[in-house]
Length: 512
Image (cartoon, rainbow, N blue to C red; front, top):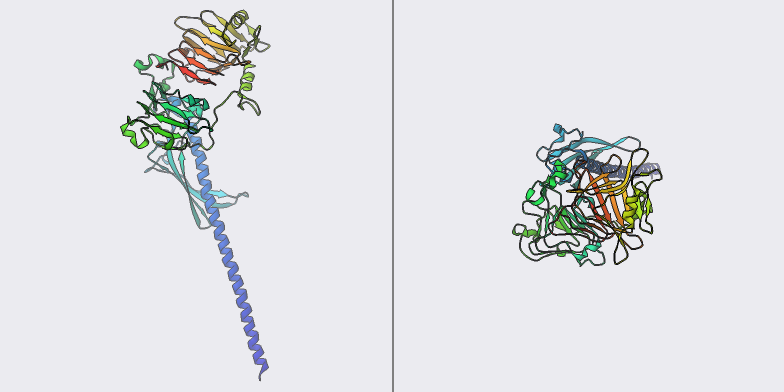
């Protein structure tokens, strides 16, 4: 028996087995490396595509804000116009008022980026993306398509963008849980959006019970002398007419009832959306008056559904956190603003608080007006601005003015308000037709706040028209903001001012 030959064969066989094991291990390792590399490049391609979507979502938002604030207006409506229609023609990335060829849509598609690189923290390229913007049938809805690539791997990310500003400052009425009194009905016409927070404890409570000739419309025309007389002369030319207000009806908690001759939107000018509570089941449709809009239960709207905002603003209350610093309430913010303006607090005698360097012209008329007040049944004091001059104004050494001055006149009195004027513990009544002059430094705006003190006061009655003095500036660049802790009642035909009422805002029918 040749043992040497057997040993050779065995050795060779063992070497083959070892080689196979080594090759198998190597091959398995390579497969794992290829798989890992594919996974890595796939992830990198996905995140490259995601980076393209996120970048151009932000860029579109910035463009939208810029057009809203600075862009030339393609139609009437000025600062109230529905600005998302601007993107219909293209995107002015250079913000110079001129669209270049690559800023225009071609067959409803615009290429925003081509092979734009994505780098890691060390600045090394790890992928690239190409982004397209696709225009839909709605001027507010666009689709972003981003295609990412990395090491031969490809990924696609798509996002639908709704360009809208749902801020409560952009609607005609922003109401809190107190709207459960359902006073939006009868012959009221609201031009612009309505936003109601409602009460989360009572989601089945109706917050709007519309009947009669109630209307919520998406347009206005102040040049219509039959409806508005000469009101348009107090408004800047660009804002005298608007065909699209981006009006929506939003109710966070609660239901609405649509009955009588209610008109929410119109077949030829629909509101942008009706988003109520939990959806259409919270919209009670009573009668068939808007036959062209039956598909949305008598409401003419582009979209209908449940309340749609993930981070909705809360209705501001005076003792809720404010906007002037951590831990400060809106009441504190008003008092701090009034420290540089004027604060008058009810007492015997009342306290008139203004800056130490203020030079008052006629403090006696101011003190008299807030001392000789009408005492109501609840013990609160009512100050009436009527037939007597009330001068609570002052001038600082710098020449800046503060406080307020009321001067009777015919056909209208003049109310000058400089900065923030805060009246605490008083009710205020404007009995005559009045034109206001609002100024804070170089800005044509000011605030007049009427708050309660010790539970008394805090109401504002406007018994005559209240309009800006057109020789000093036109609305909405010339604005007097009105704040009342409790109720505001409008008995004058026209009031042109943003209004905050912590209680109820009421008006006489057909007044604007």
